[in-house]
Each structure stands twice: as structure tokens, then as C-alpha cells.
Amino acid sequence: MARLGETPTLHPGCEVIDSTLGRYVEIGTGCQLLNVTMGDYSYCERFSDIANAEIGKFSNIAAFARIGPTDHPMAQPSLHHFLYRSNDYWDDAGPDAAFFQRRRARTARIGHDTWIGHGAVVRPEVTVGHGAVVAAMAVVTRPVDPYTIVGGVPAQVIRPRFAPAIADRMMALGWWDWDHATLRARLEDFRTLDAEAFLERYERAGAQNPT
Image (cartoon, rainbow, N blue to C red; front, side, top):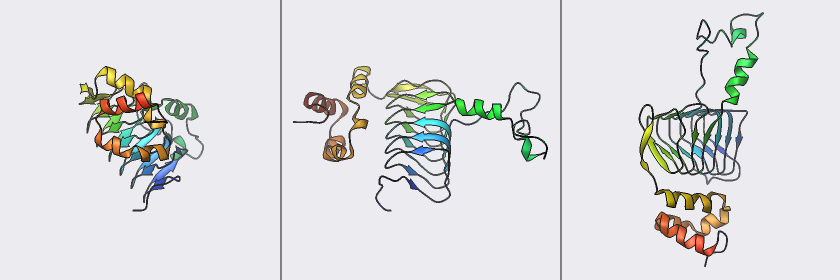
């Protein structure tokens, strides 16, 4: 495949509606995005379904993940979408604009450098912190702390990805804001250094001027 670039790469069968995609973004085959902001370098694999979500940079979203799945009206006499997609059923009835506005406002937020596993679900209005990992098939119903690994239905904490002090330092470093050339210059260190060694080098050197 061609190298990724400033213009997002969309694979066949995508449906991207009312969404903003950053640089080096890749949208896999058959994905659906509705009202989504996706930061630079993030991607979603095939047949992911994302709605009403803010995705950070460098987010890794596996195949068949679902973020911000829409709800049905639980308090009304019926769950069915004839209540709000009424124009699909009658010529003289319009859609329920207020219902759709409420859906749109329930934003799910996925942080930078996150990994959403195969078939995982992140519910509306849930925040997954920077550096967190959501295991395959998990259902996330409440906030996930930065650099935490969660799994299960509903998702529970499995373990920290990094110790809290390392996680705090990584967030303070904010390497995801480095420019494209800087990322390339430091690629070998990303590949070979563990998190603490990486921090020691770039905290000491300064974000843009390593020694």
C-alpha cells in the first residue's frame, strides 16, 4: 500500500459523515464514522463503527470495535426507531430532532496513544485516558484512567500499563505533539528504549533539542 500522508487514507466501503480526520489517519475497509474527530496518526481497522466521538492522536482501534454506540429510547412506550426516524414510515411525520441532538451531544472521548481491542465497545460519554488499553471484546461503561489496561463485561481494571509515576511523566512529556520530522529522528529510541529510559533521555534533553 502507498505511504500514509497529510490526506487521510480511506479504504473501500467506508462511510465517513460529518467528521474531521487528521494527518496520517487511516480508515479501514467498511468502517462507519459519524460525527467523529480523529487526531493525527490514529487509525481504525476494518468494520469499526464510531459515532459521536473525539479520538486523540496515535489511537489504535482494532477491527469491529464500536465507540459511542447509539441508544434507543428506554423510557418511552417503545424502543423502536419509528419514534425518532418517523419519516421513514410516514410521509406526514418528521424525524425527532431533539432525540438526535441528545445522541450527538453524548460524546465518547479516546485519549492519545490508546489501544481499543478487537470487538471492544466504548459506551457514549465514557472517557478512555491517554495511553490506556481496552482488551478485546470488553464493554467499557465508565472512565478508564490513563495508562490503565481494562477488560471484561463490564470492563474492569486488569493492571496498570505503566507505574503511576511513569504514566504521569509520559503525559507531561506529551511526545504525541512532536512534529513528523522529530518522530522520525527519534524512531530508533521509540523502538529500542523502555518507557523509563525514553523519559530519562527526552526529559533531560528537552522536548525538541535532545543531546
